Image (tube, rainbow, N blue to C red; front, side, top):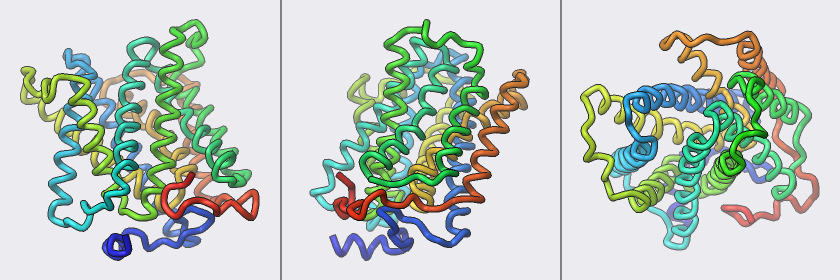
Length: 333
């Protein structure tokens, strides 16, 4: 394990503070924020590309199989030139397997929710993830959240509610299994965020993402006929969108998100990631001519203001008790 630490020192140079990789340097926090913003923008662009494919008749489940398979293959090939980033301890394989299964669960539960309830409701439910991440930080990591962190969570979640137009939906009348699936997607994404943070105490963000994607790709190729989605007839334009989603909508945003987590903690990264539905709305407005209502514009402003406030007033969460550092060295309880 010491050898692995040495191989990844350049990726783990940030000091550990209260169980988080956080630097007191404002530049480091800014860079972490920009990484997560970049991830949110790429996810938003990927969502618009996915919508184009769905409208063309591509199955969401086929797209996820292709997306994870392309992403896992591309990232593994990229890291093959730096074999140190692919080297992990045998005893850590169960951790990576579970992380990949959870990543696959995030996608499958979200798609299932979309199939049962309104898309806007599914998006809103998934972006309850910051609440679950914060709850984990308080209840299990024994952290005391700052006032501005709590306000940013409230602002980003309420802003998402307005941005996706959920105020015009009767969510409680929708399919109960669909609602539960959407909430599970949020919990799964929160779990992925928190456990990625602990994995990055030992490994680089790219290593964590690579193994998670490889396992997720295996899961999706077991749930469906292996590589079956690739055998479907697609046009050249559709293939270009599929490849874009696989690399620019999966590899880069997940790697950027993990880089952000390493710098600003999973709690803050989860809040900033709520920029995705805002970016998706703007992209739809510009490229597809979709109309944004006044409340949606207000919601976008609330999300952006929450992220800005977090940037100005950021401070690391402090321990609730003197035993708060009593985690295992790498992955928490």
